[in-house]
Image 1: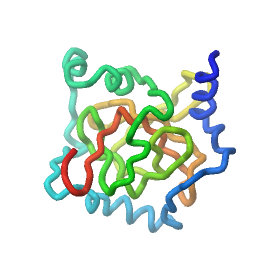
Image 2: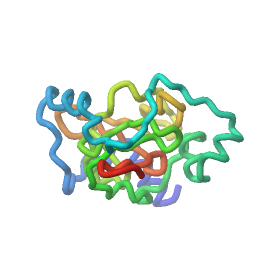
Image 3: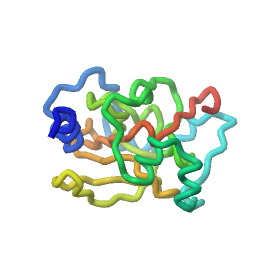
Length: 187
């Protein structure tokens, strides 16, 4: 096992939680605040943005997915891969807006749900409701909860129980699996 593999395993299992967080944005302090974020997510969507609904499934052939996605996106979204820690410019995205699935455009998170986890991947303490399906993943021996876009089935990342209060969750997302739609216009 290389040093990078060991670090990625520690990060992916949540062992990184023992390291103090740096520059974390302050999430709401109670579940009512979380519920308000979840209900009002469209306030961070650009006025001219056209986004699909979770109830509009997108099913494509493997060949169609390969044509639609870049190689790294295909690896993460369709083969359940993981990008390298620190590889995504979305980890540093600070503008108001919405993070959507790079495979199908379904809104998944807002910028108000994002925080700096110190892991090198975009991290969120909650999600837009009803946008994910989960399953248990044993790829690194330790069980982890993996989550996928409900609309297209694209692998996004893993959710851990080491996030900030009040949810205690860290939705650790591959940046390449996301696209950012700034509130000021479409991306």
